[in-house]
Length: 320
Image (tube, rainbow, N blue to C red; front, side, top):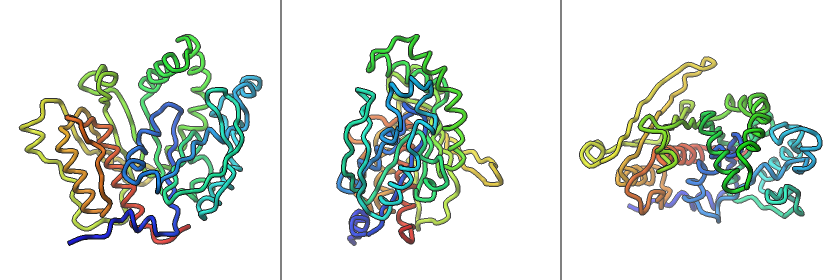
C-alpha cells in the first residue's frame, strides 16, 4: 500500500511553517535543525540567521560598549515585520551581516520556502516573534561546554588569543543571563547539552555528550506511535556505553517530560527509528545516520526533534 509522501503535501500547501531556534552564539543551534534541512531538502527549507538583523556593525558595537546580545544592537522590529511578511509567503529585502568583515553587505531579495527556519540570539524575544513561529526550540549547552566550544572555535577559526576569548566571554555573560536565557521559558522544546558521564574527552573525540530533551506534552498523537529502541541490538551487539532515562517535573503548573540520553547507539538502532518515523509521518526518505557505525546521543535527539516537528506540522490546522 503506497501512501502519498507528506513532503508533497507540504510542497502543495500554501502554508509557511516557521521554526524558531534561540540560544547563545556557538551553542549548536544550526546542528539541531540540520535534520530538518537534510530530510526536506533545500527546495522546501530556507533559513534566516538573525545576525543579519544587527543594527550596529562590529566597530559600532565596540564604540558603544555593547554586545550583540543586547536587543538595542539589533533591529528586532524590522525582524518582526519581515517575519509577518514571510509567514504570508511574501518575499522581503533581507539585510546581510558579513561575519568576516564585521560589516553589512547589500540586502538581498529573500523568498520563504514552505519551511522557514529562524536561528539566532533573539528568536523568541518578543510576543510578536513568538506568535508567528509554529514550533520553537532553545539550545542550552552547560556553561563549561559552551565556553570550551567558543574558546576552541575563536582560537582555531578566528585567530583570537585565549585571553581575548575569555575577556569576550566575561563581557557577554551578563547579557546572556539578562536577554537570552529567559527565552527558554517560551520554547516548545529545550535541548540541554553537557559533558558525557562516560568521559569528558568523548565530546572532542566523537561528539558524544549527555543530551537532555525537555518538552511539553503533545496535544495530538499519531496512531500507532512506535519510537521503539531495539533492546536486542543494544544489549547484544553494542560495544559502547549508552544510557537512557525519562524524568518528569512540574514547571509553572505544567508537567514537563525530560528525555536524558548519553553515549552512543549502534547505527542500525538509529536506522530502525528512522524507518519507524517514515512509516508514521509518511515523510521519506529519512537517512541522517548513513555510513556510520555508531550514533551519538545528540544525533538521536536531532532525529526525535525532527519527528516532533513533523508531527507538529501534520496537525497544523490553519496558516496563521
